[in-house]
Length: 111
Length: 112
Image (cartoon, rainbow over all chains, first blue to last red; front, side):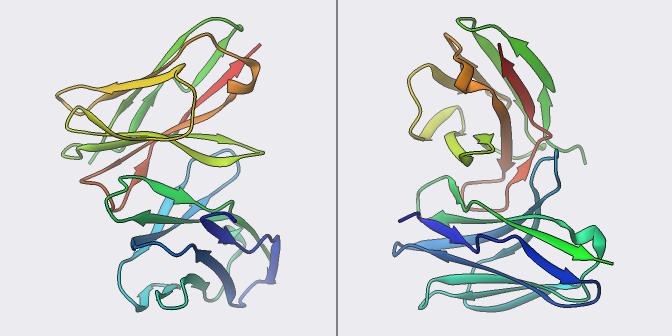
């Protein structure tokens, strides 16, 4: 079992809809959680970080963390075609000094 | 504020050669991590440096090595290149470990 797992995708939503991306992680002491967006041919770009249980909102993006259930999710409201990209979930384990990435979920927003 | 700078952007090498990639982190960032990204394996952690010390290493052969200088700039070296080393090599910098990391544009290495 992979340490960080994401929806295999691809995920397709119409413009204006809510896109929901999910990520689960293995049972270890996890401290920091990140969502990155990667456009084709580009490097990952940090879009959200979350460190404690609950929701964190930033514009159209909301990250949700549930440590008891070991999942972290990303909601994108009012999806736009420019949101079409691969979304990577990353987990930093306590004292690990590295991020473990999921394989990513490719999102397509159709006009 | 300047971002993470990786050089060179593109590199073509032949099997058996060695290569050195460079990464200049965001000013003030002391942690530098290196990743290899391939279509089949995704993002794989290579190593992380903090204050010139390698603190973590991923599951890569000893041909992959790195170092960090006192100004936090980092280099990674791959010796005896193999075709399978063709990948996008990404550097990420953060203030300290387990905090937000910012990636450079990457170095695309092609081994022929």
